[in-house]
Structure formats: structure tokens, C-alpha cells
Length: 190
Image 1 (cartoon, one colour):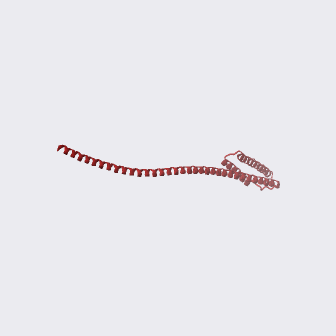
Image 2: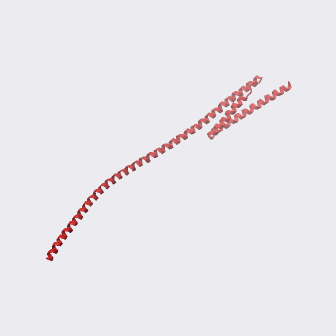
Image 3: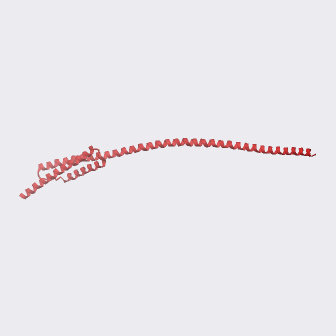
């Protein structure tokens, strides 16, 4: 009976010691999670810390032994279990807030990238408009060059006709001059 009583006392002390360790660890994990949230720590670290606290709370809540014979001890363990459930919910809330914050940062990055793409498209629209004006100028210059070439061709045809006419006239004048010279020589020789 004495050994049973000693075992029961040791068991009770061990449970109380474990309960205190769980309580202290839970408090420290919650404090670390809250410190992460307040100090603008990396979102993935916040999530990891909140998950660790949540997992610890779930594990320690499952480990609480409420099968003691004494009513006062059962009530204390029930109160501790409920407190741990509240801590578990707090840690879960912290975890969810960290996930929400990470998603919000992702959404902000996407919004920024969409803004940058919008600016690129605006710049591209300006370039296309400028290129369109240059193409219109090139088209106009091609039309002007075509008209000038056609006009030059007609001038060349006229010049060619005039040159042929001038060469025919020159040949005619030479023939007339030769005939006149021949008549003059015949008159002189006779």
C-alpha cells in the first residue's frame, strides 16, 4: 500500500511537472508566434512558427491524462485541457493570419507585375503608333519617287526625240551643205 501511495504521488508529481512543462512550452511558442507577427518577420517563418505551436498544442492536448480518480485533479486537468484548446485555437488563428498575410503579399506582387505589364503595353502602343507614322512617310516617299520616275522617263523620251530630230536635221544640213559645195565646185571648175 505504501509503495502504491508513493507511486501515485510520483505519478501525480510527474503529471504536474509535465503539465507545467506543456504550459511553459505552449506559452513560449505562443510568444514566439506573436513576436513574429509583431516584428514583420518573413511570412514563411510566421507560418512555420504558428504551425509548430499549433501542432504542439494538438499533441499536448492529446497527451493530457484525465483518468485520475480525484475530482479536483480531474477538474484541474479539464481546465488545463480547455486552456490548451484555447491556446490551440489562438495558434490556429495566428497560423491562418500568417497564411492570409503571405497570400496578400502574393496578390500585391501580382498587382505590381500587372502594372508593369500594363506600362510595357503602353510603351509598345506608342512604338507601334510611331512606326505606323514612319511607314506612312515611307509610302508617301515611294509614291513621290514613282511620280518623279514617270516624269523623268517622259522627259527622257522627249529628249531622245529631240536629239534624234537634231541629228536628222544636222545630217540634212550636211547634205544640203555638201550639195551646195558641190554646185559651187562645179561652177568654179567650169
